[in-house]
Image 1 (cartoon, rainbow, N blue to C red):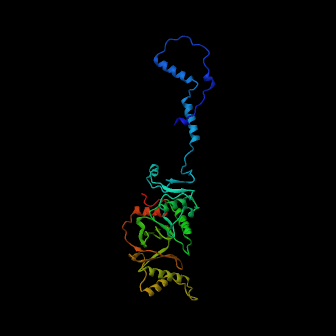
Image 2: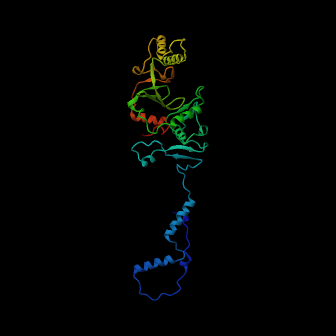
Image 3: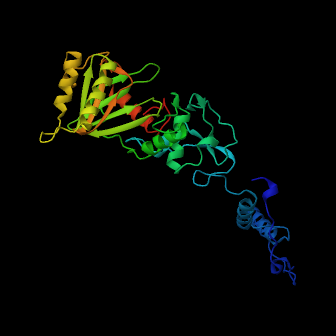
Length: 343
């Protein structure tokens, strides 16, 4: 501690008064006693400050002159703060190891401060600004956004007539990601992995099935990264993507058709037969998947179904699909760590 922060404490008046009598002659003390007497004499000097008192005063002065530095719980306003808080805590990692992980740059309460890294969240091809995205619904939404914005992958949100503006699609994606589990569910593991679809200029989407429960991890899309859970879903694999779109349209049409009076409602098999008559083949299911095929998901029980045609084509190559890779993709998709971080 430098001298400028030390505070002198006056000695009580009773200690400053000199002795009123003369001590009688005494025998010359030993050298050690002389040092002790000298120390005692020093304690009686007016300018002497007791070491304990000096320490206490110094601490008080230091607290007054040096206010507490901003912490993660007390963020400094109008500064760029590097936060090392990571919601996910992998088993076996202690607190010390967590603090040594690289931190995620997050702009706190000042959209005018320039982002320190290249932005990865885009609106219709243009980098989104922090000011455009505010306000965030929760701090967790903000953390997800910060991770996506500093990841290795671009996330280009695009306007859609049916699904809203790029900003609204981002906010929906943030809500989905922020509500996911910090512990990777068993469904998203190598054991239940099925296949992936790959579109041009995009990272693949991974598909999983565990009994009647299915799910997918979408890394890049005009609606942003997301995680999907479905029950009672059937995957159809068709020769081309156009065939997948045709089957999708036929199923939707049959779901809306009303049968003639007195006849039973239409069934899904009738829609499939209609498609077969048009294309001269029956659409495949999980057991006939092959590279380059179109993919259609039919979710629910006919006629109350929800369909989805994959934007990419089927890819059955399992190269690079490992337990560790799936885990990393899961956490990147839900925005709980920046891309490229070690597990």
